[in-house]
Every structure is written in structure tokens, then in C-alpha cells.
Amino acid sequence: MDNQWQGTGSGGPTGGSRVLITVFAAVLALGALFGYQGELPGLSQPGRSVVAAPVRPAPPLNASELTRGLSPVLVNITAAARPFGAAAAGSGIVLTGEGQVLTSHHVVKGAKTVRVSRVADGAVYTAEVLGYDTHADIALLSLTGAYGLATARIGSSAGLRVRDEVLAVGNAGGSGTATAVTGEISDLDSTIMALNQQDLSRQALTGMLEIEAAVSAGQSGGALTDHTGAVVGVIAAASGSRDPPPGGAADPPNGYAVPIDAAMRVVRQIRSGTPTESVHIGPTATLGVLISDARPRGARIDMAIYGLPAQTAGLVAGEIITSLDGRAVTSARLLRALIDTRKPAETVRLGVRASDGTERVVAVRLATGTPG
Image (cartoon, rainbow, N blue to C red):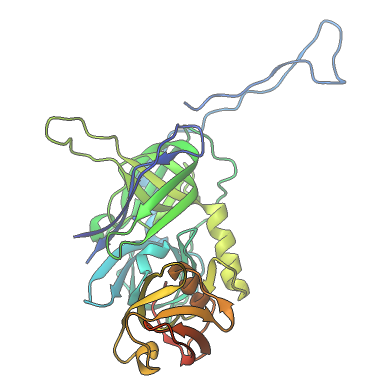
């Protein structure tokens, strides 16, 4: 069974496209040769012209050799989630010998526990989520007790061009082995809208690399590499179908990856210890409520989960949260964002309006939640 994100959009192959996509986390995510011929300004000579050297194409990509070389720096991730103990399988890229691992946020989203195993030798570690960026779909993990691990060679996505050949490597289907597919880059700046079928959340992902390759379940969080084996992206999504529907033609499969330059900016932010509006650092906090947008504004409590902070503080279904520490709460999304900036054990003061219109302020001590 797969945990999939789906979304819609439209666009072209040259940039900023919106496409129908599916993000997988297995439940157990024309290239031109540019040359210039002519006179360089200020350097022209009568009867002569200066010709710029053409850009040479990269050598052919050796998929089997690259996959063998990447296996020691890849890990398989199993994230056990609430409330029913379902598990999501994905991939990760080892950044440091002490066990910092780069992966997709949606692989560990909502996880109660995260277990990581090395592709090369099967060594198993428990993992802590150091931080994440939901908007970039990037998370950074730390493996307990890890040392001396082989680390990935991080390249740059700045020099990538349409029609460059790349390799996508990850834990396809949750198999536990490094599975690779090759393809060409078809877009350097795609925008996709994702629907997570596990929790029905939607997320717009921008600036994505689009690859003409059959990326599959479990490869989310895995490595997108160039012909040298340098990591140039983090696999996040896929679209299309390998099998045609009855009476029709299948859409060609495509993969999507976060450019490594963008991913490493998130990593550096997490390492700095300074959160931002989109980057969360450290353990998450929770009120223990299911919420939706209230009319005309506010966050309606659909359920206060038994034993968690909101229920303990006396909040009940049907009440509307209108403020947090004096800041107006206009929507469920804003309330989630405000809680995401807090830490477990912090106390917040919630403005609450009951169904009969009466208002009160309630102090709530936040509990530890799961990765947003």
C-alpha cells in the first residue's frame, strides 16, 4: 500500500510548469548546445572573429556503476505513524559521518517513531527529526549512535540544464535495496500541487526539477545524481502511469526533485538552530485537536483528543479558537503555523468562543507532537 500525494496543474516544459503529480512514500514520494560565434566587444580585429568554445555534452551516465557507488551513502527509512501504527517507507542521503541524514519531509510527517537502515550493510538506527521545512518538503534526521558513516558527495543544481541525463536512486517500493532509474531533465522550475492521501493535506512545491523517469514509491528522499555521482537533487514526487488505462494511453511517467542547492539551504537553517516561518527546528508541539476553518474566521475545534492538552484544559468540539497569546487566529492553517513555532511544555493562552457566543481565555500547556 502506498501513501500518495496527488495534484493538478498545467504548463509547459521550460519553467514554472504545473503538472498532475503523485508523491510516493511507500506505506509499510530539448537541451541545446549553446555556442556563440562573433566578435567579442572591444576585442574585434579586422578580418577576424572570436568563437566561443561550444559546451560539450556530458559523457554517458553509467547507471550500474553509479548505483554501486551510491549504496554506501543511502539509507532506508521506516516511519511509524499515528494513529493506527501505519508505516511509511522512504529513502535518505547521509550527509555526515555522525549520522545526519537528508530526506523528504513527507516521509517522516506525522511519524511517532523513525527507524533507519543502511543500504550497504543493513545496520539499523533510531532517528530523531532535527527539523524540517514543509514548504520545501525537506527534513534533516540524526541517527542515534552513528559514527564513521560514508557520506554523499553533494554537488550543485545551479549548473543543471534541460536534457541533462540524471539518475534517481532510492528505496523503490520499500524493498530495502537501492533501485535506480535514469532520465533526462525536462524542466528546471516546475510547480506542483500535492495531495497527501494519508492525511489529505495539500502542499504546493515550487522550483522543482522535473525528470523524464519512472520514479516509484519509496524513492522519496533518495538521491538525484549527475553523471559523476554528485547529488544534485532530493527525489520528492512522481506523476503519470506506467500502465495505460482501459481504452486509453498512459501519461508518460515523470519524477520531481528538490534542487540540492535549495535542500542544503534548509539544512543550514536547521543546523543554525534558528527557526523561520517555514523551517521548524527540534521537537514539535501539539494542542491535541482536530480543527477546521470557522466562519467568518477562527479555527473550529472538530475534536479535542482525549488526554491531550486541549481536552485536559476543558476545550470541547464546536468551540472556536480566536486568538493565541493575543494574536488573532483567522483560520485553522494560521493556528497550525503558530503552534509550529512553539515548543513542547510551553504554555499558550487561547482566546476561545463557545457555541453560545460567550468568550474566555484558556491557558494550555503544549505536549510533544509528531513531525508536522
